[in-house]
Image (cartoon, rainbow, N blue to C red; front, side):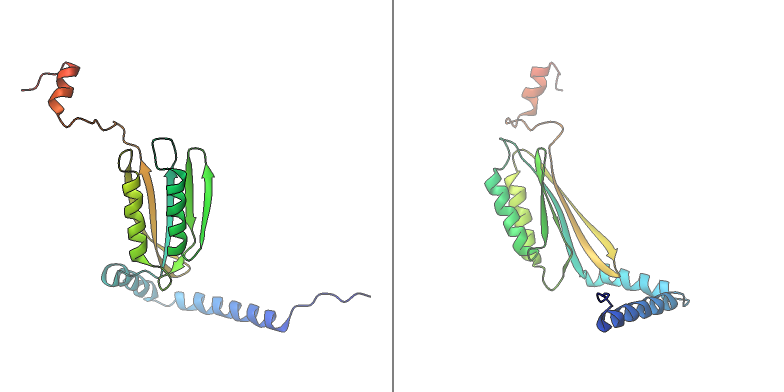
Length: 177
């Protein structure tokens, strides 16, 4: 008769320890005042310390002949890979390339390098797009995560090459006082 797979003693110990930790967390969370303490800690971490436990980013790169080349986008993605310690996924979409990073601990994340990459992305889309850069604070598994969402947005009305607004109005038949 073949032997049945039995759980390893280390695996059993880990499962029991995880279950005990979950029970302890549930019991502690029911103690009065714990919720207020957690809220105060989050406020202190966000506004006083201004240092999250982890970082994450989501960036979309529109592609077209008038936009940055695929080589430039590839260079930005490669730089992001170094900033996030190789923890990112790249998705090809219709008309764009999207990059989603995993959460990276604050110790491994190079914030100065990330800011420099964001500036290069902004310079790359300077003539055709405005950059929307949203910064969010999120809670995930008891840790505070700083999430960056970067999207180049095409303006509703394209920029004109002329700096004279009176010329545009006169051409459109609008009188200027």
